[in-house]
Image (cartoon, rainbow, N blue to C red):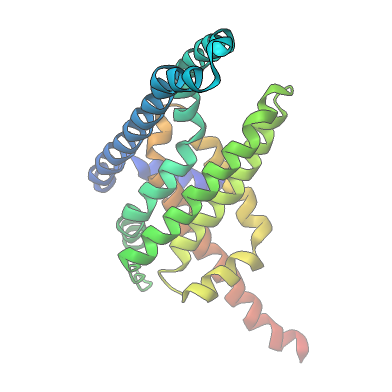
Length: 247
């Protein structure tokens, strides 16, 4: 597993990957910008027109609480933009991966496994659907874990473990679906759930590093292509050994 992670890291900045890296980083930055704008406009409304509307609805007695809430939300605006960029990165990279996973995976398969057949690219709709599902789950997990961040880092641990599970599952399935039907790829992931979860910790660690985490789709996809190859090879070896043991 460590060898696969190191190999994926060394491949990230190789010449064939640079174009994909630029496209993936550009899309990730664009998505983060959109999220930041949405969050900014939402909080601006709450501290401006929204506060005026609430005060007008509840009457003059609400001025003090509404003013305090406005100050609190203004403070949350600055913190929220930074925290959102950090904690929503797993969701952003999951969506970005759905657009570039096949291009990255094909580079790895042709370079490192030239004697083996190249996988079949996923239909765009299926790839984007998988990315949206994982992104939605990542946002939900962020919302669940956020209150626990106040308890001595307990929320951060929860978030890290949940991110490891989600990203491990996402990137492994994208790699496996190039060679297996959807149901079979998911069954393969469940069969090796512990290994894939541990591998997901490598990706969760990578996505937690600011700036570098913009390249998570490259690292995660390349890493899981190697993991898929190793797991399917070990599975085939096991199948070949079964008749010998039975005899």
